[in-house]
Length: 152
Image (cartoon, rainbow, N blue to C red; front, side):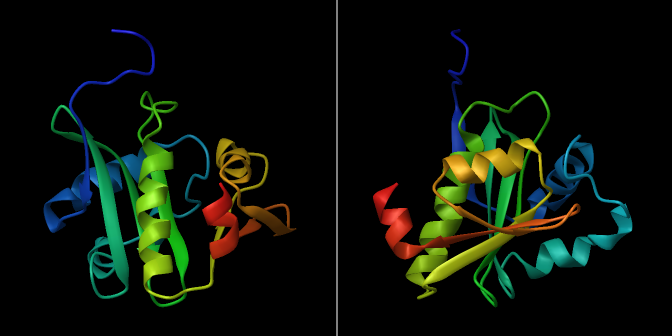
């Protein structure tokens, strides 16, 4: 198998049954680590499945290895994480596209998110056409307009 080529990759809507896997992924990352892991609760994962937003997962050979959540209340990306060892396969890019397309279809003219400065995520969003905004030592803001998305 060549590097970057993965068989049996499925992108689909997240289900309640995926929450444990998404939580494991979120807690396994080495960047954008939660200072207080209890801050993101299982109830939040459930709420973002339908009430507050929508989620998507990437499965490889039936195992959830990445996920993304969009917040339909404020038009933001609430989470985008890839399990260690599965980075660089295009999973984040595809999941982000699902979330962005959905939020724009809901009518948001601009989508926002925040991440930790100087991380791979910080560089990733810039490469995807997002505009880097205000930054502090702990957080950098990004935005993406419908026009910028169409051009990328």
